[in-house]
Image 1: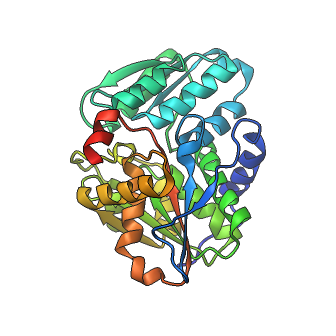
Image 2: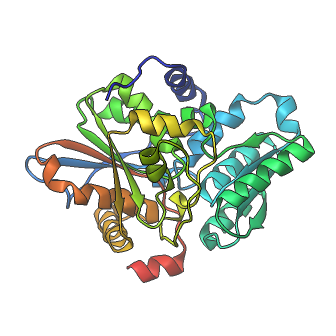
Image 3: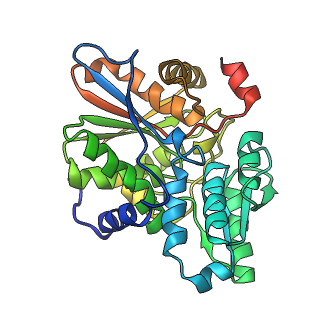
Length: 321
C-alpha cells in the first residue's frame, strides 16, 4: 500500500494542533502492565481522560473554533450517539453558541446526560444512528443553521488527527496502532498523520462484528447501507453517510481490518480497566480485543492502543465487571 503524504488533510491536522492547544491538553500515553513484557511495549493513548471523556472533543473544537462569529450566532446542529455531541456541547458552552444534537432513541443514558449537561438540546431519533444524521442535516438545511458532521468533514478529521501528532511526539518508532472504527473520523485522522510522520507504523482498524459497516464498505469498494446488531461499542455503531470523505481515507490508509465479538470486546475492556484504574467504554474494548487477536504477531514491538472514550452507563459497566 502506497499512502499519500503531504496532503491538504495532513496540513489541516497540523493547523488543528495549533488551533486546539488552548482547549485540549495532550492526553497521557500509559504503558500497559498486563499486555507488555520484556520485549513488547504496549501503550494506551488515554483519550478517555479528555474533559468530555472522549477523543471527539478534538474534532468538535477544531470545527467550532474555525467558524466565524457570524456562523456561530446561528447556532450549530449535529448528529451523535453521545461523544461527538458532548464535544460539540462543550465547545458551544465555551463559545456561547446554541447547539442541537440529533441522536438515537436508545442512546446510553450516560452519554445523553453528558450532552445535556453542556446545555445543548437533544432530539431522539428511532432506528439506526444514521437516521439521526439524515434528520439533522435536513433540520440544519431547513433552518439555515451550520451542520457539524461527526466524521464527514476535513476539520473534524483534522482535529482527531492531532492524536497522531501526540503519539509521534512520544514514540518515533511505533510499530502499530490499534484504533476502533465507526464512521472513520478517528481512524482517518490518525492514519494520515502517521503516514506522514511515521510511515512504517501500521494502522489496524478494529470493529465490533455486530456493526462493521465501514469495514464491509471498504471490502466492497463502496459505502454500503447495512443493518447493525446491538453492540456494547455504541460509539462505533450504525451506518456510514454516503459520500463521506472517510471512506477513501480508510480504504487508502488502513493496513488491516479486524472485527471482534461482544465477548472479546468485554474481555478487552476488563483488561483496560484493570490496567489503568480508569473507565473505558465499549469501543475501547474493541481496540484492545483487536490487539489481543494479533498479540503473537507483535511480539518484541512497540504498540499503541487508542482508548477512545470512557463514557459508559453505570448499569452497563456493572454488567461487564
